[in-house]
Image (cartoon, rainbow, N blue to C red):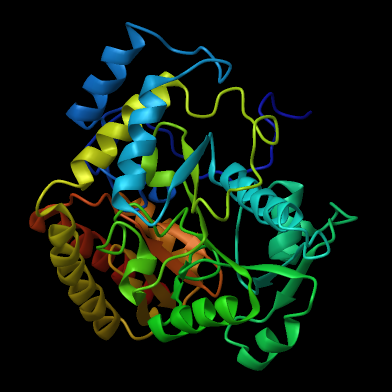
Length: 392
């Protein structure tokens, strides 16, 4: 008999009753160190007092009105994003995949608005993940995502990650945009080198294409800049954001330049819940914290300590781990042992991590970890690795 909750998740035999900072607690009081942050979502940890205050304050006043009316919290958050990014305008969503759907629609609508409707195809890359709508699994083309869900949507031309010749060959008179994650997340924590991001920007400029960045996982401070593309000194035309932007409250956003968004006039796109007063009250507080002096510098500092600890872990357990890769607090342990075994052994040591492709264990902790919490994470991962090494 099927369970009341659709059995589409391979869930761990764990559930949690409360959280504080990087810690989660079960009903029986067992504490787990959360180094996955709900897949890079609880960017300021669990139950951050400023986020709780923002949510409670707004919840007592107004939850929802829809986008038929002005939403002052939405305007405030949009202005904060515009003031601190490349963007001139923002559309709010409930999730990352909705933000990506908006990005694709916006790019197609742009070329329609400028009299080139034949330019409607997008170049995407192997190992990418942009969400689980039919449109976004068609964009990523992973067999794991698409098996049984055909026919897929047309309009996406797939290129292997790192295939520069294939990329150039894929550009045709019908190409509208290139879509890429500056740090591939689900595909194995693979940073796109800064020179390659600069090359993509130049290629788009050369052919009149739009550059769409998916910073759903790697954005919102995770690499030590507010957004990962800043390290390369480039700007996109359109960018999808989610996960950390709400600190745990469902929120996403599609950011764009005025030029790229020129076709998105009244009635062309919409969302019932997107950017509601509750979500934007929390999102504005998240961004306020991240923009405070020293916050991003501290992310870079603590990420150096974490990476050094992980490198030592790899050196100490050569039968379990191969190497570390990633940027900032978006790190991956490339494993020799099955990554699921590492994660499961971590449960025994009361530490939570996240699997990714290419036999990678993702380390995606809250951005405000302390030195002591980093050291505790390394100790617990070491305990897990020792147990696993002994069993190999």
